[in-house]
Image (cartoon, rainbow over all chains, first blue to last red; front, side):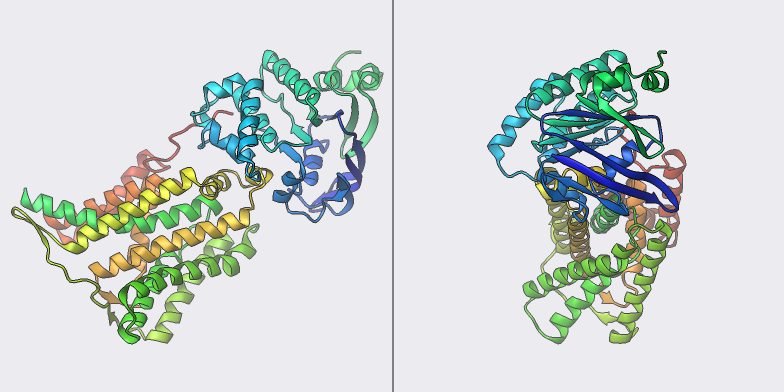
Length: 235
Length: 292
């Protein structure tokens, strides 16, 4: 479904991503884990065309994304929940969700999808008239995910959905990620919380300073001694 | 009391013009964080278009008005496309200096074409003033106020109901996130310039009906006043620009009526300084605190 081939990305003279290659198959949850600065967010930004990369290809549903502007990519069925939520704070919850469906013209089905988002996140329904900037961190994260779902994506990319949330909210968010996946959406999950990410994912890739250093089934990675030592905090 | 009411009405008159122009500043700032110093000169473009089409070519007033607003829109869009867009990813100071350059280009261009000598603005309407007891309200004042209010309400309606309007708000809050929603930021920015400059075109018309001489530097003074209005209300926030415009207009005309005409600008700048000392983001700035 999504294939990344030898992507190299530079910030000025800094070589941030080295020959990154990985793939996501339909129906999977794939996670990219790694420490701060490993290049996880840069990969998602490259896929979404938010930053240009020097060489390599990103292929989604058989199409190369490299030359496409960022705003055309969501239309192909690829949605991106950015790091730090990035909700539109001076717009209401409902308006944020409307923005998520910006490219759609099927009013009826869009409405049905909004009801589905409200089922996943009843809190958003209660607060649909409230300005997004006044929501709590967890609610903003829910809104950010809900907003991305409004485009009815085939593949949902999420950047650090657990960041800054309380442990209870983190497990709530992760169970919703599982639900979304079971409804048929493929998920690419970027996380620092390696334990949580690997426990919901099918497969994982471990990144270190812009390189993929390890890959495998999520269960295998959870039991890998190196991963345990470096990312899970257990020996 | 009569003096007060008269000055209040004058203040609302000039304030509604400032508010319309301030909206253009604030919308452009909101979306690309640029103080468009050429915005005042768009007024001058609108005013000369009226002079040329009516006084020289004898077109019907209604047609001339539409053409002059379209001229403002066209100039705004072209300026954005060729002067600001190439600099979108360079440091803000580059675009700021470019904006000053564009302003000079427009003023000097107008001087070259129309000479620096002021030209009379044609009389667009001749209606008797409205008498309310001892108060006399000119028809121009009523028209100005009505046109400004209708424009502002339509704009508010547009940005809160229409998809493009909501997209403008989304891009002005977070351009990257808006693009992830599938919003074409370039189109949205073009639309913002078009609307902002269209409002300046309306503002030009109303301004010249009040002060009917047209010169190449016509836009400087209302431009700077409107900019102050936008900052006073909280730059980037549309209701702030309207509020700022009205406050400025009323303060100015009350000062003229009660203290002295020469002090009116000093009072306006004084209000700005005091407001910024206590509310650096402007009157309506940062009314929503974002949790992180």
